[in-house]
Image 1: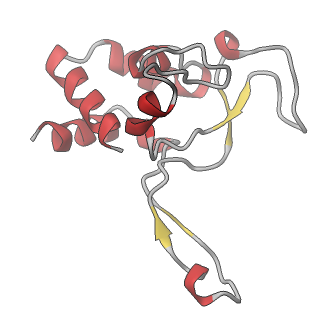
Image 2 (image 1 turned 180 degrees about the vertical axis):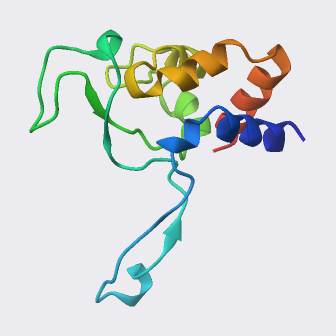
Length: 133
C-alpha cells in the first residue's frame, strides 16, 4: 500500500543514494557479528549538505558544511522518544520529517528539489514509509 509506494518514491527521487537501505558488516572473530546484512538507511559517509546547514564548526577533518548521513532506522519512533516532537538534523532544528527533507542541500539538493515537485499523495506516501522505519 502506501508504505510500499513511499519506498518507491524514496528510491525514485534518490534518497537512497546516501540513505542506503542495506549495509554488510565485515569479517569478525565474533561469528554472530561477521558478514551480517542490516538496514540502517545510511552510508555512514560525509556529504556536503550545502550552506544552509553550514554551522561554522569543524569536527575532525569534516568541513563546516559536511555531515555524516544520519541513519533513518528508528525514525518512526523518534517523535515518541523525544517527548512527542521531532528534533531532527544535526542540531534538532527540524520539527518534522518534511522540515528535515526541505533542509537538505548541497549533494542532496537534487533529491530535495525532486521532493518539492512530488504530488501530495507521493509526499504523504514517502512520509508514511519514513515513519515505518
